[in-house]
Amino acid sequence: MARTLIAGNWKMNGVSASLPEIEAIAAGVTPAKPGVEALICVPATLLTRASAAAAESALMIGGETCHAKVSGAHTGDISAPMVADAGASHVIVGHSERRADHGESSETVAAQAAAAIEAGLTPIICIGETAAERDSGKAIEVVTGMLRASLPAGADPARLVIAYEPVWAIGTGNVATVEAVDEMHTALRACLSGIFGAAAGDIPILYGGSMNPGNAAGLLTVRDVNGGLIGGASLKAADFLAIYAAA
Ligand code: PEP
Image 1: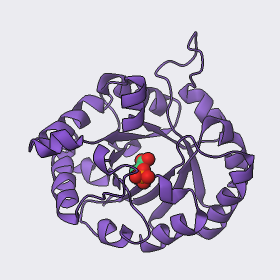
Image 2: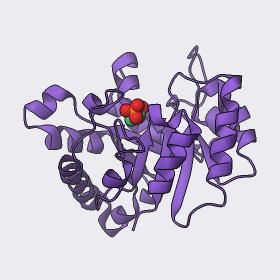
Image 3: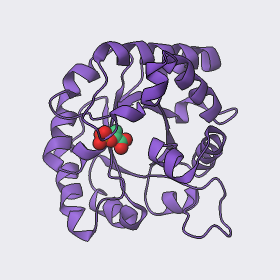
Image 4: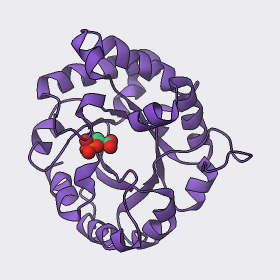
């Protein structure tokens, strides 16, 4: 049975003045609820300070992306060892905003995830269909294809987290129905089982897309939903902690 992970994604939000929110979340998730982990992924500029703020707590800190290479001439990028060195335990790879804004392909995402694992980080590999792909009836085919292409070859399943995030649900308030989430997560678990066998049952599959304190309980009770990746509602400690409480 996969552990539950409630993960925040602050995206391009947060400066020094936001650190009290990290401190409040850290205090609110400590001591940890049995079987439930809490993580906030922050911009690179906040990684070190957020890690320090969460140091004595059960809250983990993550990055929002990493380069596939360890170092080199890649101006503005951040490598997986840098993210780990700044105190992170996890890193998001393949978020739809990175795929859209930076042209990151599933092959790139697989290389980033491999780099993350090599650096001792747990990658959160994001996949999800667009509205057009869902409307065409191909959502399951598209997303399971993305999953296969985004997994690093030979990865240890114990080092993976998957996040299903329908693109049309991110930041829109249009949360996917419990039925659609159930159908997709069942398909993703079956896909992972085909690759990893019984160990696939331990891989957390998060749902992401307009999760908030009002809809979290319903989404988190879906059988193969093992937590959430939360954008907007992770920026305020009270909202994030209400979702954590629902897990
Ligand atoms: C996200 O950024 O991964 C996300 C799911 O955002 P939101 O919760 O705001 O839809």
